[in-house]
Length: 426
Image (cartoon, rainbow, N blue to C red; front, side):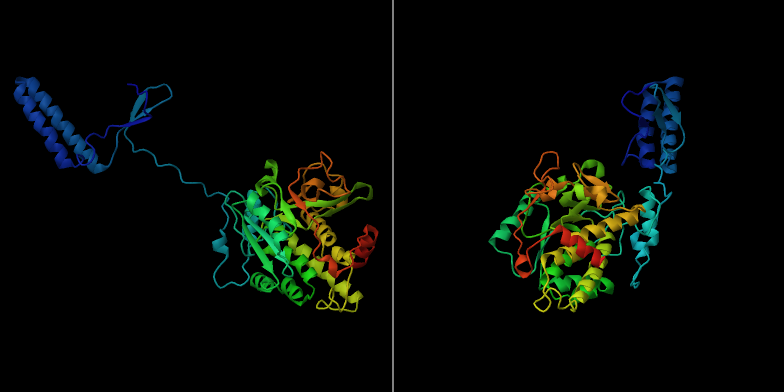
């Protein structure tokens, strides 16, 4: 007996409503009686008895819930089995860790996520380390069951440090919506910055209080971008940065499940073993602890800079205690950002990771969970660092160097002076 088109054939005749036992018995007994009268003799009686027995079997089968199966094997032959069809196996619970909902118990101001982090890293094939960049206790962190890292939020953040969103800035920021129509744009201003930071870091005084004390809008803007990305993630872009390629294209396919932060170089001087990560555009998942490293390093540098000017966090960078461009770059800008990032990578990898690991880049480089892009990706159009040369990465954004913050500080930038100041503040 072969069945060419069915893997399982259930002989459950007379389906609902004909599956009711009494109704099934009646409709089978009636033709049996008629058959016995049409065909006289023993043959008719025997046929009638067979039909009646079949009706009785179907009635018992319905009441017991048993279903006869004919199961096709690979040879095409079918074999009968008098057992119910097996239920599909339940998903294995092996190695399932606690859920965030289980760990985040109501009324607990500082939930313990260590078990959840261990679970996430277990499925990532990594040995648990407190230095790894998972931070589900920060707002906005939602981990995917298939990917222990939080998803990259579809948000683009801009900071306006002093009502500078003019028509030119709007032309630049509009490019982000044009290239990424599914992304939401957020503008943080001097009015709502403190509200945003206080909301997200009320339980982190070491990150919140120094920010609230700072009086310089320039220094605040530098710090605010890292607080934003730590809290909610997404893309941060200065007001004078154009988007040239959709954000979805920024991470090569082979790195998509390994990257938490995407940065691009703004300077690349192999002869001096010096690189600088652009801080005008950063892309990150929420909750990465490297941003904590960046913020704490910046606060330390800023306190030292204030002391050197006999100033406080409230006065440094204002007319009371003026600073120059190099001060900003080294203390709160790309120099501080770059060195703190490499420190965080070194903690993750247990290595002495520094600028020498990322010089002369010609293709994206993954260090820990930080993807560093070559000079053209974020830093094209410059007169140094091989910017604009073929083979130095694809142009993803373009920085127009409007420099809206420059009138408040000395515009001169010197690499030697920056390195000297960096040694003093480190």
